Length: 331
Ligand code: NAD
Ligand code: UFG
Image (cartoon, rainbow, N blue to C red; front, side, top):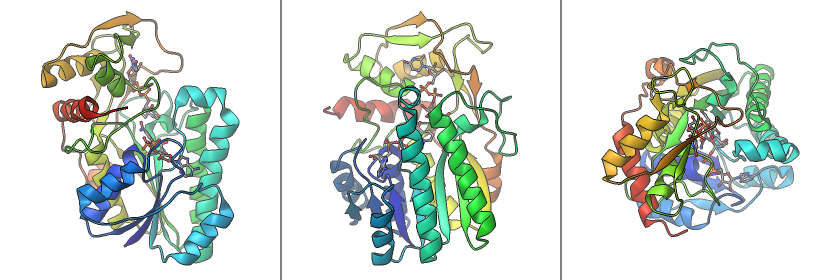
């Protein structure tokens, strides 16, 4: 299939482009590079041994998107483009709502106008709020604590309403848990700007000596060792989930958790990273971070039953590949 990948130069998008190309699809990337670099596109081509078409455009620009859809016969869209820093979304709510929601509306409108039926959307486990774990797709969503989370809830709603009004549309909402790791070549991976917000890139930068020590946000949660529990998923597994979702798209709205179904605490992840890479990661315990929940992990059985997808990489591989990318990364 000929697929439009928005945000394809970013972390999850770049790995997914490689997986799509390897599966025989052709890829057109639309990315404004607000959180990525043009080199990622060269690296996608280098790993996959195939070319992609790249447009540096803002996908909230409806006129440009209309031209793009007129110039290419897309069979599907995978919409990764979005702003994703939770803390920043509290400081810049309008930017987050505008970018994340308008992009979804513009692309949905273009799909309807140009007869592109297949749409895969990057949603997040954050839409479950502080629900009972494991999170199941059928759960009633609870309020999220930030504009980023709400932008995902609203985008899901917009796509659901669009699919109801346009019965030909086949929409899949993928709720990712915590993506980590990198392509085993070390050529693409997560390269956050400034000091990382997320645990794995922070741990990797401490191991590299770029940051002094990890601050563990709270050890008084009701979890195995008191630290926060998350469902870390290797980005290569996540990328494959998109290829499988695309293969199974059917009219209507279908929602899948993409996680491993296993929870790992902050301290378990730190120790796994140390063991996998033979390194020390100094840390200190500090108070909880505002807005964090104790535990978040998936019931991942629906994706396995309906898409035939299951995460196969464990925490050791995630830590190894994250470090392999970070240690060679010059940024
Ligand atoms: P990323 O920042 O690495 O990639 C997003 C890409 O979108 C970047 O290349 C950025 O330049 C581009 N972009 C942003 N706004 C754009 C716009 N208006 N027009 C064109 N390009 C634009 O982030 P990621 O981790 O790869 O996340 C991809 C998607 O998955 C996002 O929608 C994110 O919210 C979602 N998600 C991420 C996580 C995570 O922890 N990484 C978890 C759940 C969901
Ligand atoms: N943590 C620390 N120290 C740090 C960073 C994180 O102790 O320096 C802890 C957090 O308190 C949490 C765990 O590590 O317990 C994971 O935190 P992350 O910031 O890596 O990830 P979150 O689960 O908070 O959120 C991430 C993405 C969201 C996405 C969500 C989906 O940032 O965008 O996963 O589950 F919605």
